[in-house]
Image (tube, rainbow, N blue to C red):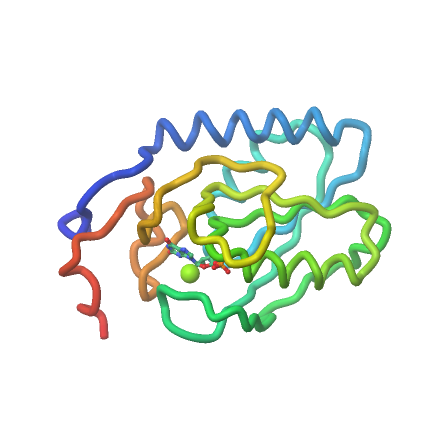
Length: 181
Ligand code: XMP
Ligand code: MG
C-alpha cells in the first residue's frame, strides 16, 4: 500500500493534535447545549471517531451517506442521499462532520437539506479544506487544515474505495491512479 504513496501531507501526530484542538473548541462552544454530531459516510469515519472522543460534553451521534454523481475524483454538484439520519434534527443543534470541503457542492446540499428540517442550528466541522477549488460560497465553522489543490487519500479518504485505512493524509503517485479500473 505504502508503495503507492508519493507524499505524506499530514501525519498521525499532526492529525491527532488538530483533532484534539477542534474537540476542545467544540466542547467550549456547545457547553450546556444539546448537540447532535452528524458524520458523513464514508470519508469522515476516522475523523468522526477521533473527534467525538475529544468532545467532553454530552452529545448524540448519527450518520448520513451521500454520493455525488460523476467521476471518482470530481464532484458534479448533483448529490444523492444513500443513507439518511435515523433521528429527527428538529430543534437540535447539529454539527456536520466532513472529511473535506472541495468545490463546496456537497456541503451546500447538506446544509440546505438539514436546514429544511428546522434544526435549532447547523454548523460544519471539516478536517480538510481546499478553498482554491470552491465553486459555491460555503465555509466550514471548524476547519482542521487548509490544503493545496491536490487529490488526497487516507484517514478515511479514498481513491476508488482504496486507501481509507491509511493512518495519515497522503498524495498518491501518478501510477497509482487507474490501476484499479
Ligand atoms: P465537494 O466538491 O462537493 O466535495 O466539496 C466533497 C466530497 O468530494 C470528495 N473529495 C475528495 N475525496 N480526496 C478524496 O478522497 C480528495 O482530495 C477529495 N476532494 C474531494 C469527498 O468525498 C468529499 O466529501
Ligand atoms: Mg470519496
